[in-house]
Image (cartoon, rainbow, N blue to C red; front, side, top):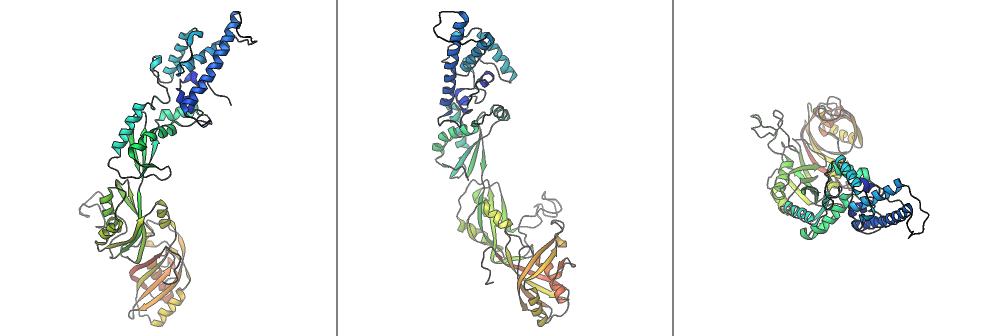
Length: 474
């Protein structure tokens, strides 16, 4: 493999940074690797230069060699030796190199071209690392990290390095197949100092907090990963939505119509559940993820609907889940059970996996309906495939298409000559109100169509969301 030393003619990389260009080769630290590569090349170059100069001057040859180099080739050897010396390998003596002023002038011109300030030799900073690995810089950044984290509870962390744009561009320009990014090395070196200070474990897969550091200006920012808590909720009253709704008039800004709350409804399932968690965990915001949603005028009963509450950027990560349940349940509007800590995969499962549902609907007919008619209806509904076009009432926020869903079973309960209850076990995503009314023919077949009577759903409750396999005993 050929080591590209010519890069040192343009950039006086320190030993550590030159070693990082080949950081994936040989298990040693970058400083030792870079110094060894430079030293090896320097020995080779000095040998060539001594032989070439003796041959050129026809002196008493101390070295027997047929080596013949042109003045231009000798000049290139001197230039590279000067470049390696200038990059920090001061073991190279410059007594063999004449016309140093020429090389210094070339470097100063190159520095100005690269936007770097020309510095005296002993003050030169590597244009890649800029001394960010200096102990005093690492110590100061460590102190900044500890100060930034002092109000956060966490068990694991990961350090991320944020590079300014020009250093990203430099890395792209000088990249070799074996290069290690300065991000990786800086994070590793800083971690050696920070870990004993924080007394927390490093987690590369799922850390509580990612500490983002700009090593060039010592700025520290945090990426605080959210907490996910899953459980089941019941909505015991009608008239509240699942999630917060902005006032339709003011779009959340506050107006007379919403009593300057910015809300269309006074509260929601989301707000009732989230409030105690936000109070204790001090998150920046939250989100409720449910396995589907019920309408505002529909109760969620039975075992409850599976949900995940996501607390974003929490300062406190552990809470007493039993006490959280008690606070929510004291609302008498929403009840939560089976709380446990979850993860982001639970959000995907609850929101995207289809779950069969069991509903209880009160059906009102515009004319008398007999027991026989209802029993016949139930027979027709069993394993019935329904073609349902997006209901007119939600067409403004749902794609207008035809969904195919199935009713598996139904159980009747006669109330009087005009009213009966239907317990319906069906696919998730089936709009039950429209299954009953037909929605002007957009749902077919429907209860209205099968009875040949105009029917509406007076009340609706969700009795179960079947996020489990055994649904035989409904």
